[in-house]
Length: 327
Image (cartoon, rainbow, N blue to C red):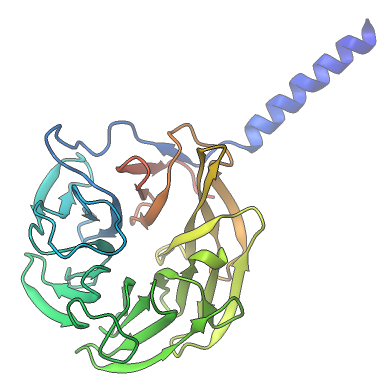
């Protein structure tokens, strides 16, 4: 009897210890954002933050992923601005402009950059939606300096130069000058360093280093501003790496992955915390420390307070996680 009592006591102590060790630093905010019942929110493929920390979302409205790509443009608004505090939509535009929304970036002047994999283009707008620059030939895939083939994402440097991950059809990262002049590129299809199998997302740190979510290789690669390989992260426990976002205020990185169907049921996504050398520190999501619905995160952002925003294309929803204690 005494042995049974001691065994039960040990289990209770271990359980309490584990719960304390596994307390999540993030809290999922319920009922955020406030999407009106009559608003069509499609796959939220791109997320970005304005200087005022409002969240901008690039989504597909009533359109689903199609192969081959459709020719007609989406009739509904595809870009929305969400008030950071209230979660209410305060601006919307983009109707009859895009075929298949994908990547989104906002630079330090609040210009809006998008990639459209249906148009095979990268387009820059001012904060009101006025077109400022177009790269790529509309509807023409290619692999030279004037074409893209299903480009996936953009990252803009402090000096205005920018990088494009290109993408589904090509396996390269291209750097352009501030005015859109082609500078150089690196990458080819494969699984070794400097190679990609769908470079799907990218971001920059304060030193100009480039972090690439190499989706089908299930890894993140880090390069310097000239495209020289520095290091990579890969783990047997992760799935497809969809996106990466650098917190340049506190110098850490968040990545998101996705593991697909098991017995016809989605396994779900993790949000993974790294230092700038791509050493994994923690994770939450399908692995635990998370009480929300199963998700398929496509993009992620971190605001100046450390709060996380994730675009979920499985449920066509946007999640906000409030930082309640620093890692």
